[in-house]
Image 1 (cartoon, rainbow, N blue to C red):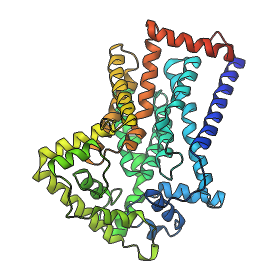
Image 2: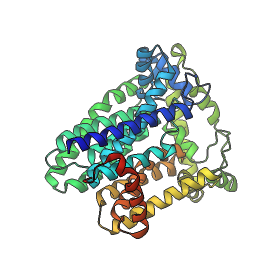
Image 3: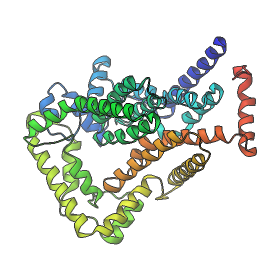
Image 4: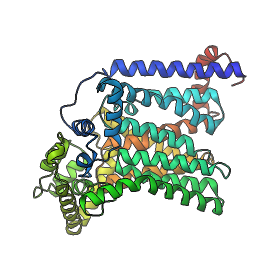
Length: 431
């Protein structure tokens, strides 16, 4: 049995190394410096990381990803190539993490290896590896979070609570909206633990430790700006954009069409000007912290006004953003594939629920859908945000359904074909 296990893990490592190589080759991983977008801002803040108070005092970005760039830069002589390779390794490790998630859920190494290959084949999970964005690390941490919570029980909940708090804190320091992952995580753990006394202790410990880990940032940013700021000063801006505020760029999405139909593109506040200010290089000596707070309050106030003035139009726009996030703008082949993937995985989760198998994981999946939908409805429905929360759990749902339904004739043919190909390689009939 030990020899067979070594074979499986060796094949798993070979697949992962091959996947890393393919990412580096096909994505043309290089040392190129980004010239626009969030990457410019991240690099600028990382370059001045030691001047922390001035660089992060505006609260527009949390220090998580700039710290990663700064730290990896120290190790590599500020090489963006090295940073991108690390991101490639982290995203390719989703294959390994998915293997162990499926192993815990199905108890089949053979099927888990198959699942890892499928996860490695879903391109949207890996397109961020070459970008100087926080998405790649976020994907890795969310996968780890799923791996940690799926077997939580009354005997290990304390250790799990510590790990959950640390991972969600790290996710929050990367992107402030990711603190909302706490909700599906807690609901999943409540469903799994069942014992109310244990649930109460778990929630108290998890939420308490998370608050302790995030509190230093909240205190720093609030004191620096003489105003209470829980996490970030860009929430007002994205809320205003979500309410129809335009940055002057046309993406031809479903939500763009709704904006045009109802004439919702607001021009009285210059979003593009504010974004340009915060997406360009940071000058620590002339970084006006108070201006960020002023902008945040101004945009938040205006967004609330727009919701009061035109609630029906805003609701329709909100649903359009959610649908766009799941691919239903149908602008081309990419959107069609994403829409089919989203619809198939959601319908499959409903069918799987009726089999009474893996209901805890299905509940987690539905809650992650809710979190993305809520964010897209109020803020922005970018498909990259959906990828972070939805895609990996959706693939796992499809795989779990395949495992449950593999006695079905069509599914059985696929499964037998996989075993026929893989068995000679693994050479272990007991798997």
